[in-house]
Image (cartoon, rainbow, N blue to C red):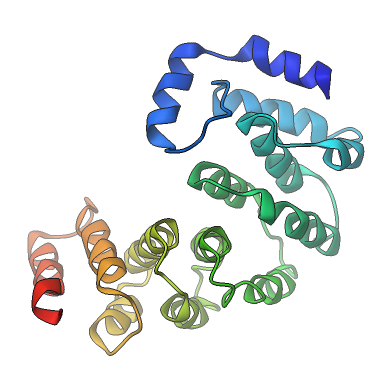
Length: 232
């Protein structure tokens, strides 16, 4: 592990560290290694004795945590082992960057969607900020397909969204769902739902940022925003 840490220090950029720290508030253990470099190293580790690496991996540096999560996505393992490895890793997530990068690196194959879905459902009521974000982002990355869209929207509607990064993850997932399944998503947004005003309005804002929408569609969405002062 010390050899790996020395490699990370050698690959670090002070300029990139300064840039990244502004994007990831509260991350105080960052060296400043660019994500593509970490992905290449993680793929290399995943082709070798990755289990030994994961068993010894710690969180001394942000990049060390990130690489452990990426290795879990890249390793050639059964869905049962990937679920077990990811379950061990989730408590280590403490920022949106690790959360989203690791989730996007987990690619499900035919036959793996349902067991992984069942695994995710174990976190839907946890109330923990990044466990909720994991569920929302994985829904967005893997389950916005015809077979799952109704279930995805039902899950997003029930997630606890008080914490900021949980709320932002849910809003992002809703906006992406709207881009792919506008009728189903719009129906959810128009009917009675459990989204907080903040999450609801964040989702609407993200939807209107799409370049694929007409001006009329954007106007319609903006008119749907909740007046939070009035509701209070």
